[in-house]
Length: 400
Ligand code: TRP
Ligand code: SF4
Image: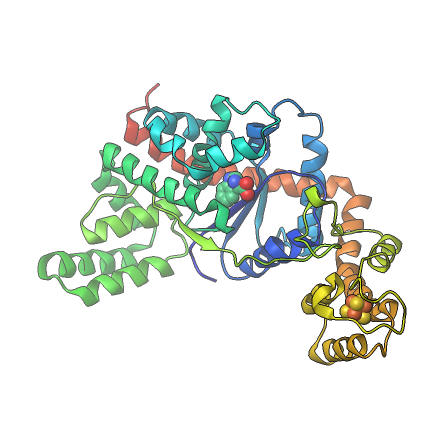
């Protein structure tokens, strides 16, 4: 398990579909085994564009969380929480807003793009302009190292990095840095602490790069250290202050173009989706009704898979042998389209089986979902509060 922290969020849009699964969730499931992960429902973000219709948020939030769990996100491994239940996001957003130049927000590419795309809505609001800043707060408040996002979100990560730099430059070192670093070292245990001080001496006095490396490794191994203390000690070791808000890195999620029922990208707005835990019968009906190569009017007409949306699904779901069978059978009219669709139907149902089962357990026991969220919220709050404590101190707001 790496020690770097992964964080990502998703707006509550209601039930997820297979496009979300193949595009995002599968990746999250893989990440939870390698990194400490935080995944949250970005419910405040939904309000930046949909502030007039807030009635569905709760239901959408719960449905989406169940979909995450169904997809295999494991609450024992990853921390799952709801943004609006961790008010520290709002506090950091507010404090950062004081030092964020308007021009930085106005030039984020999604600002104008989205305003044009969602022309039916009045998005000349403060919340909408500040949306990338809220996202920055989401990330920085956990000092996340890695943020898995799609390409469209990369400018927001870049914005976050610039903002973190600006903050660190402005509020710089912790005032009582030395004492806090020494107190942190004590938490490593006496022997490890002495070793760290020695390595620090060797690096700072003699520029011994190997000592620096050794010191860093020592910090990574020290399980008892909080992230804040580890960062503080890394700064101490290297002779700089503690970076209050470390710059995050984007973890670019490869754009998976999950095809929908009509061959276009699967998307709610195209009405071409299969939901994550769609009824078996409905899956069967939807795939059976999928359009195919228009040239195959009759069973005996040969077809061309390249012109058929079903083939796109074979590319996602079928192995080499099955693909070859479909290719051949289509081109020489050896198989009918319903026959060709069957392995796709089977594969989708097989993929959904365990998801439906996991979801059912939570639907039968909603109290378990609530428990998971509450536990996640509490863990997230604790981490976020650690950061806010440093932020308030750095800004001189830790009085009273
Ligand atoms: N803006 C992201 C989206 O629309 C969701 C999001 C909000 C997010 N805050 C985040 C993603 C923090 C990663 C990290 O998809
Ligand atoms: Fe599409 Fe398969 Fe029919 Fe060919 S045989 S048109 S690939 S469904």
